[in-house]
Image (tube, rainbow, N blue to C red; front, side, top):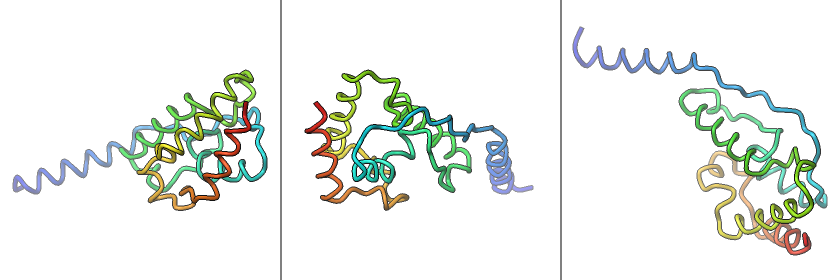
Length: 141
């Protein structure tokens, strides 16, 4: 067998072995929902819930390792930072801070992440969406 063929065979076997590493894709139960007007909830559900809630929808590439590992990591990190499905666990001051942080991240262009929106076009925020989130933040305190 040629060196090139051995190399590509090794790559293929490694890729297949990666698929055997289990990833937990089960969503925990929703404990509560974020208190927000319906138009705010619509924007959050469309643009934020895949990572910042217990209602994640796994994209097709979330089933193929090693990309699935990165998706699982990103979701875990996002839920640890802010989880709209466990809103009841935050006290009122934390909730206000998080609402304000939502707008700060959107205003700075950090959320939704630049690498997320090409694969999830509905998550792109237009000016109306941004205005809804800005108003929600301004009225949070």
